[in-house]
Image 1: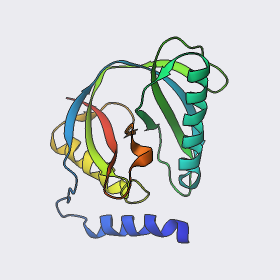
Image 2: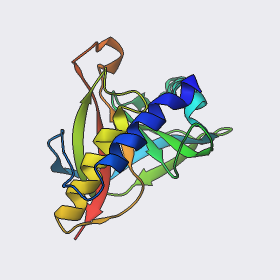
Image 3: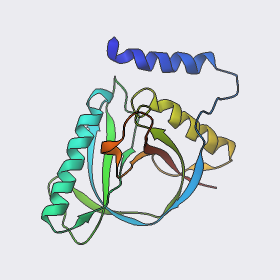
Length: 181
């Protein structure tokens, strides 16, 4: 029950707002993202296992890239290919951009993330926890609909290079959605 309390509070707030204009607490912007070579691992996780699993996967990718002589970028992101909840698992893809040449190994694949436009907002360290972060996802989704755009691909969290040293109200990540007209 304790683990599900945050989800319940978020859903209750959303349902009590039904029929009202959505309250956007995050400014949403657009940015162009260049085509990027990434090393990835996809894992099926639920909300309780999400952070530990993704951090471990990211570390596994970094170790592989460094051992292969490739240079990982300082930014990384998690792509949510389904709804990750306390009650159900979904595939989440950890992506680490890099330069150099490296072969796939074990669960690590290498692919090209296509160039795209993203709608995004910035969350602080304190806001980047479930269910608080869901307000940022809601803000981006609402903005995309109101702007007359369509979602092109899965939503993601883009973690900043210095996120490990961020505290409290420091900017920590972007909640982003690839979009088109």
